[in-house]
Length: 117
Image 1: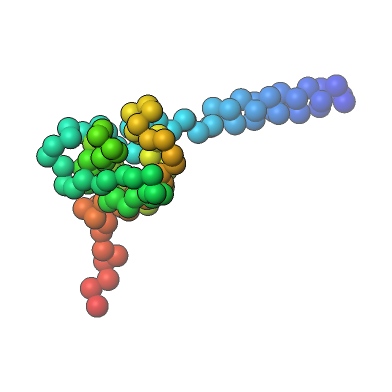
Image 2: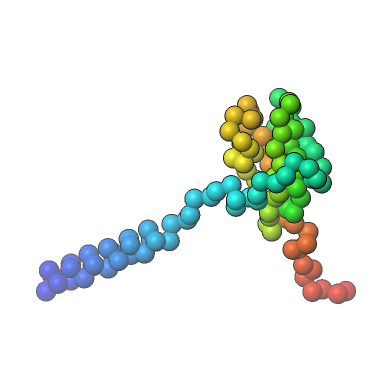
């Protein structure tokens, strides 16, 4: 009887472990934050200098980032506030230091609460 009970417990634990591994989060890729864009036309240009530590952008914006004589453009997707290292989306080797990107939600997707006072 004890052997049968231990077998059931073991099978249940194995099943739970299998379910837990299937629920693990997917790795975040750059397309989670937006997509590369043409350098022009963009809504604005952000110049990044060695002193730049962060940038503020809004979901839905297309930004041209100028770093020295090089640049890249990105269209940001965000329906909720996000923060990430800009090196994650910049072309390899373009940024030589950490620049934090703070992305506010796209205002087109922010609805009112329905309160019409």
